[in-house]
Amino acid sequence: MRLAFSKQYMLNDNIIRRLAAAALIGGVLCAAVWCGISSSPAYAQLLAANTPLTENDGWDGNVVAADSSDSNVAGASQLVLAEPGSNGPTPANSALEATSTYAPNSKQAGATGQGTTGNETELAKRVAALEETIRQMKANKAEALPAPKADKPDDKAKDKDAAGKKDEKNDSADGAKKDKKDDTPECVPKKIDTIVKPTFTPTGRIYFDGVTYSDDEATKAFFNTDRDNELGFRSFRLGGKGNIYENLNYSLEVEFRGTNAAIAYKDIYAEQQSLPWVGHVRAGHFKEPIGCEEDGGDLFLTFMEKSPATQAFTPDRNFGVMVWDTTDECQDVTWFTGLFRADSPDTPTNTGLWRSDNNDWSFDARLAWLPYYDEPSNGRYLTHVGGSYSFRHIGGLTPTAAYNQSVTYNTLNGLAEFGTRSWVGSQGPIGFGAEANSDEWNQVNAEFVQIWGAASVQSEYFQVFMNSGEQYNGGYAFFSYFLTGESRGYRKDLKVIDRTQPLEPFFLTDSRQGLNYGWGAWELAFGYSWVNLQEGHDIVATVPATAANRRRGFNQDVVVGLNWYQNPWSRMTFDYELELVDFVDAGVPSSTANIFGVRWQVDW
Image (cartoon, rainbow, N blue to C red; front, side, top):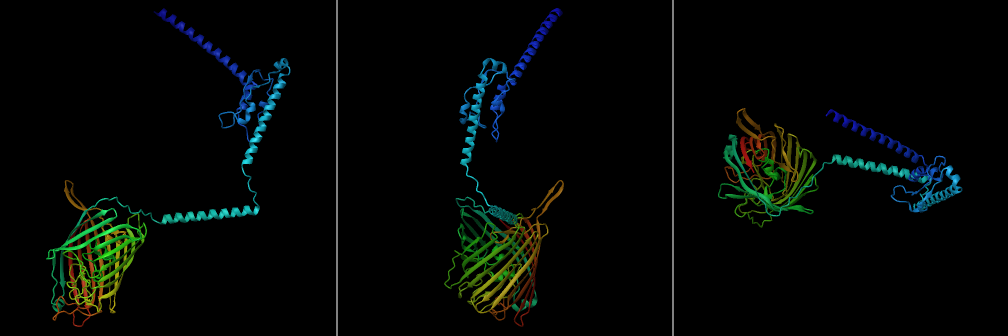
């Protein structure tokens, strides 16, 4: 076995040695052949022929004449010159498409006689023809391009200055555009949802109030009146809103009152949207556009009720038509204008149809502007200014028209009568009011809102100019601050206060780790309001005086409130109001009252 293995090993070793020797000999032969080829003039000429021409059209001398002493190739080789960048021969080089024979070495030249000289001459002719073709191609290219215009030195200087000024102007414009872009917030146009059939979203609210009045004894004795305390539903409304189509919406809201007129109509209207020039057209029964606080409604008030000044000089709801719109995509400016029946009731009953031939019409216009609005924070920082104008004619004596506008004015005697209500509770100061000598007047309003993070300031001023010469005025201002860091909500398109969003809702749960809770949002507020009804004349209906009597005077109110927002749709309000009235007539005692109120409200 060992002998067999030794023989086999020796056999394999001999085969490997023979293969190695064959490979070595083959490598030597290949190297010799390669050296002979690479040193031949034909190979050098082949390389030169396939090398792109330079810009100055130089030509490798190896193409013209080869070194006969180093040339070992007497055969022939074909040369085809290719244009740089192309895959085929140049059409102009057809003269070189024929076979070229290169000169042999000196030994072969002696045997062949004149062969070498003839080949060199033929090759020189072909090179000359090629050079001529190249010159013609360059000449044709120069003729195809127009010659550059020769500029005078002055023209060049002018062009250079003009170009410099143009570049400087463009740079300035680009810089201004960039600065403007940086300063101007990006505003996203309002998206219109695709709605092709009616929609309905239920709405409602419940206000549960508890109010106590503490009037001074002299006032109660003079007017034979004592305001009763209140406990129960201040408001209970149901309704809905939605779209009839994508550009037509509606609102429906009714009040359940618990009296013979069990149901009263509130906001009931239809509104066409996205119209050219006018934007929105609303028709029905809704609030007139007078004042920021009144136009925003009582759902997002800071205190339990609107300020006494707002309640004295704003007409609340009426039947009418209004158009309104914003002036740009950012909704920085909003305008409103409308025509209304000035003496229609705020809470009509039955069918809500108001019949009157007393020419009781009013025209309103409101304009509101946001000189500053912080887009990134969605209005956490903003400045709101605005104003409104109203021309009003309430007509003559209208049956059942007493207090059609709550306490703003009525037409018991066919004349304008003004009164107000308290900041807390649904009742007004005892015996306070005035009657003008006219049923027609103009009134203006100015409004201001500043929201700066958790802090907020809001104020308005009202001025009434009666056609008979009397003037009445009033205003309010209040400051509020969120102890938990929130800010008041704001609706940008309508320019009114909107819903507050607590950073965390209120909750209280018991677990194995103890009590878990959230605080909700807490807001502290202070306010002041005044109403000046010192001109005109008193309304003395009975002797001795009763609650139906109204005496001219000056009303002032100071209020302190604490709001607890349990979540965006529920809150509790704790208010205290100091109410002061100084009457004009001698013998009528001034009034001082302390009012406490608590409300728990929910809405959806």
